[in-house]
Image (cartoon, rainbow, N blue to C red; front, side, top):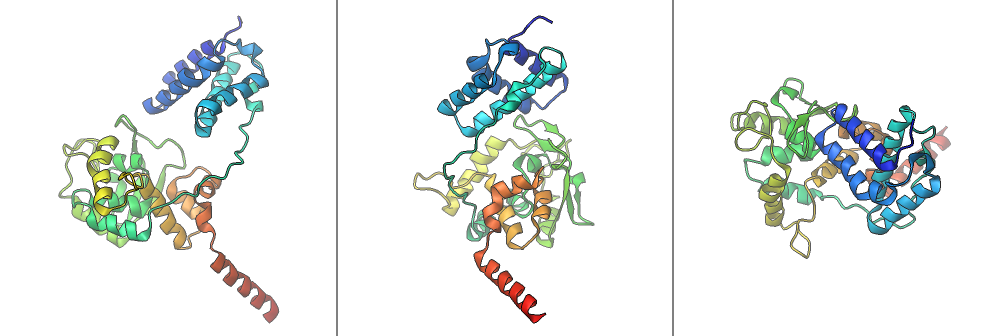
Length: 311
């Protein structure tokens, strides 16, 4: 086969993504990595000539102009596109897999989640129209995309379970969860169950059978929800920074749920499952500091000593 450049490999990879019918939002992200990072930095290099040093310089260039998160995502895309053309015989070795994004030694600020007082205030102040949405987000830890795609057929009031089988992407297109872990069942408490049952008769009807649609029964647009509902609610509750902007995003309601799960002493593996994380490390990376309770550790150490010496 004739040698190809990284740019040509990008085209082959993106065409494959289209054939695989990946979500439009996913393809948009991949295309962004290609357009803004991969082609400008290494697009002209022949694939067969790409070295680990080239990949390292590629990462350094992104880190200078963008974030570590973007560098990590761009490296993942580079590895994927090289794997695609590797299967087609254009190259024997995926050199991008030899290069790792080194861990940052900088101390990252601790994540701040909504407090119990703020959670109670949000529930008390939200309008009846959006109270079921806000309460469900706080009590279940569902992602915004999962809430926007939830169907009534996936809410089991007999067994008090919510089944995550569908989500709505940034383009308001409905599809299956992005990962196997995203497909899960979440238990409902009696309070949430009653709120959802009361919401049924008031919920706008539509062909998609959505639990939290917009006013005409279609998928709720994320930006509209933020601008028309969430931001005004945060301002009304006084949960804002010095600049008057909301202290948290809608995604923070998911964090609020996770903090409540952890406070109840639920096992990390159960929390991972409820949140739909693909690995336990993802759960610990985001919420690990919440599992740390020095006072409880002292109690557990005392109990260990007492059990040992009593024997």
